Amino acid sequence: MRFVNNAKTALLLGSLMALCMLIGYFSMGAGGLLLGFMFGGVANVLAYFYSDKIAIAAHGGQPISRADAPELYDTVERLAERAGLPMPRLYVCPQAAPNAFATGRNPRNAAVAVSAGMLRSFPMREVAGVVAHELAHIKHRDVLISTIAAVMAGVISYAAHMFWWFGAGSRGSRDGGNPLGAIGAILMIVLAPLAALLIQTAISRQREYAADSYGAELVGNPDNLADALERLSYAHENIRTDTPPAFHSLYIAQPLSGQGFASLFSTHPPIEKRIAALRRMAGRG
Image (cartoon, rainbow, N blue to C red):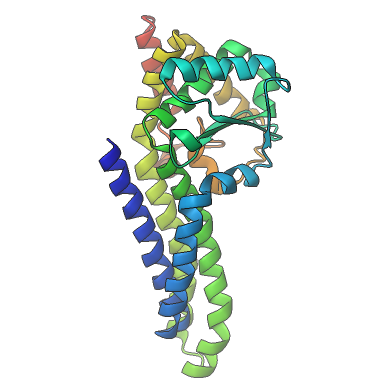
């Protein structure tokens, strides 16, 4: 499992480098390859070593101790010990939309973040189910992959727009306003974020079922997590999310996920199927 995850991480970082170089080429020509290589190299270092801090900072997460939230802290500590994991750093994010995510390079550097909306509106047994799901991601060592994929989505979008503005003037003066160059740059602005989204989708869907199953075993009652997912589904239909879209693949449930054709681009499997699988585990399916 560790080898597979390391290979996926290397593939992601290589894809990030290649996409940055491709964006540079389409936006600025051959000279843009070097700038894309440099930008991609810096992005790789940030994605690998600082993706957890980027994710937490993007949500405005604040570290908490046992004194700040004793029930939550004790719950996380108990579940982490049961899973054979070090106690992760614990954060509360100010978003009203209920959700949670895990991040970090490995179990020793892991963090779990829970939104203020979840702590306000969910009973602790359901929060425990959600935390167990996130600890399952840490146990399976897929939090680095998912966090890098999330950071990639933001970096690629930023790179596409940056190279467009850098390259628009130089390409216009060099090529005499060649419309094919402009069309190529515009296509990269559109297609690069889509490529990042497809990478996130491919990584995220199956790992959610595995995390649900292990999390249910860890918390000791599959209904705790199933009830939390039902509450999340209702909440996301009625709360306008205030979470950064690039990081939606990290969450236990994707905010405002689409239906029909739009669901093809969802980073999570349908929440109804996840609930049904948990109910079957509990003997109620």
